[in-house]
Image (tube, rainbow, N blue to C red; front, side, top):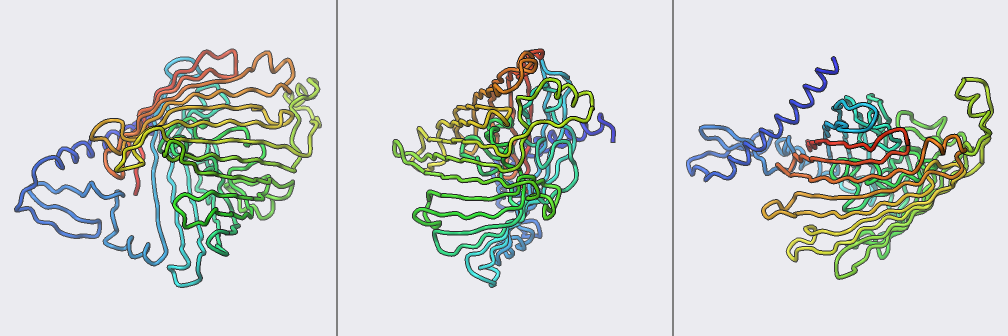
Length: 450
């Protein structure tokens, strides 16, 4: 398929979805005909009149599968499938001002072994994902991805990946152990800035903190434990987590032969919920430590030039690296009848080993919320700012060209139906590369829950 064809298909899908949902909403606002008949079919309720309209109040496009979905869930097997389509373009700055259209599919399956009649308090989570099309990241000229979807499971990699197969066993109501192939992206989530780039912000710096990237793989074999305070059945418990992962984990390999070959990554995290101002919030602290050999950033310039010229050189390495991150959110206002509606603030900060991590310090702050407009209770919105400091260990030659980076992003997520959300997005980025002008990026994202 040509590039033009890919772009046309992506634009057509997003446009058609918007048209269908707007039409459906207009139908839903009209007074129903009392003579209409309701039939139950394999894909949910269908109201028949002069025109046939699907049930747009259902939470997924494909409905209940004629009751099969509910039956499976009641018996311990839950399916969550979504597609994300995005169209973004560099309006000014960057390295290429063309628009790019891409997306991803994600399939989540959870097995509850208690409901399946096998054994108590045990779960198996499976995540399958792949991306398609092209993303704007390659056109920006910045290290940071303006579209997080284009990073995972791997950049510019369209094959299907099983990035998570994790077994969890609760030994009591307040303690659980887990092992398997573990996906780490959700570990830095919060209410206003997270969502894997599918629901809130699109830029990676508002989805996760970049400083642990050196020591924490996206997907790797590992083992861990969780302690809940007071217990996992509480509405919002505090959680202490410990994990050991293979330092070389990749989402497109099983990892049995390679993930632990060169070292381990140790991760300790603690999440504390709060009720400041009688409003919900959270504070998460994470420290990481890696034991593989990491390339030192402060190399002899002759070695770097030799590597660029493809000469055989041995770069100096260090046998460990570390990072520390902090992640918070706090509601400032909520509606009494629905505490999820309101607005608040979020923030992240991080520090890493400057000898091995290109990003030494990171900061982000912003405002997010839900239900800003009357009658649009499920729309979400946010505006955020980030600042990333380049390591001082880079040599003078690199520092002459590269510096700190900063950026701003705002989005508004529109719920057209329970299963279709459309998000206009705008970003301004001051890149590390001093030879590239300030980057202005506009985009549109559609998320469909199947």
